[in-house]
Image (tube, rainbow over all chains, first blue to last red; front, side, top):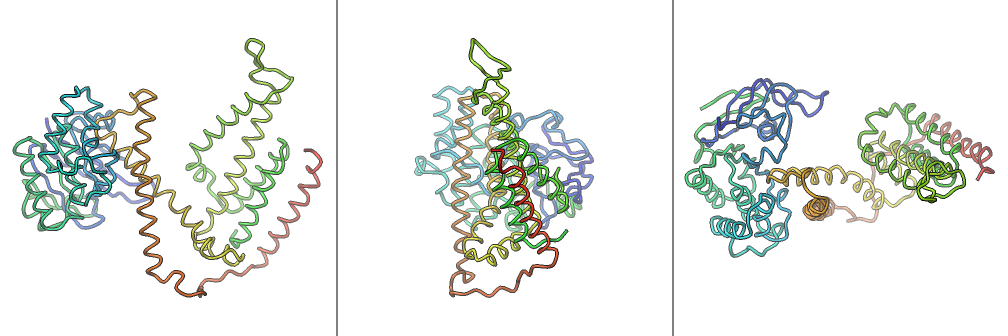
Length: 221
Length: 243
């Protein structure tokens, strides 16, 4: 099944500290736009990192697209899932915007023509053509985020996890992001798991919404 | 045992200086054991202290072996085509290097039993300019942030479908260069922000600075300082002629 399943998952950052995620069970489907909301420290980001195997649970089972996460490396997970960090700067490391998009394609046996074609398509789709030679770390917050999303879409994931994607965006860029997400879901069949506490953003988007508190889900709509 | 940070600094200086000056296994072994005893008296969890040094210790072991291979001697243990690869003298050199590095690394851990504020105050009361001591401590505090940035970029690379383990050595080196760019850029960015925020809080706005916190040496601190001096004298007396 195209879903991430968590069964009785618990997680703490060290053995001496309290559980950040407490005995949580839930399914996240790749056909949906799933929103996880909740106050600071409720465990939203930790949950998102458990969903893509950046963190391993202390107890319970995480199944990513029918495979036990214990047996998957991060590069295995990347075949189905792309993770967008809260600060997209953390995941930009190439010398130019077009290199950044082409980076993952070079490691996936694409031909040069395919790499060029996909890169140009992403530059066009995310309106990055004018800055394709620019140094990624010098772009504005909105541009960095569009670029980080473009890098993910280029490798055709089934699900994209976004951690607080609107935290550094103004209203105009937030609305642009909503449109991008809806377009990607409709045209590219990509599902989303979005961590956010931005009510304006959440009210515009989302098929399934969960509310987290103290490491557990208290409400589903 | 609660000690003044200046006393801890003096122990650190003693151990690391003696470890550099003395070059035989016996003296270095005594220094290393002394260092371990001091860490235990200061109630340091040695296992926990070792954790961040894990990769460094591996490097020290490799360097010791290299030292051993490149140090020549007459008592050959392994040789290839009449070329001495490992000799007894080489192994002793390697062991000396290993003990010296371990003593320096472990003695630096003594400072881990103080907070950064205590170290700054200790250095300031030792007449080190406040700017310099603040900078030194902030540099140390920066290391975990750099480590986190490395780790985040490493995860980001793997989450783009790149299996680093399966890459050739050449590709691995190339991928490491990708790691450096955001880490260096991030470090410069953070340093800029810290510098601005420090200045916005009035740093260097006036020539003098009032400190609420002041350190005073207790009886136990004086006793330890005396023991430290005695230790240096005895050490020189016992091992001074061996080099």
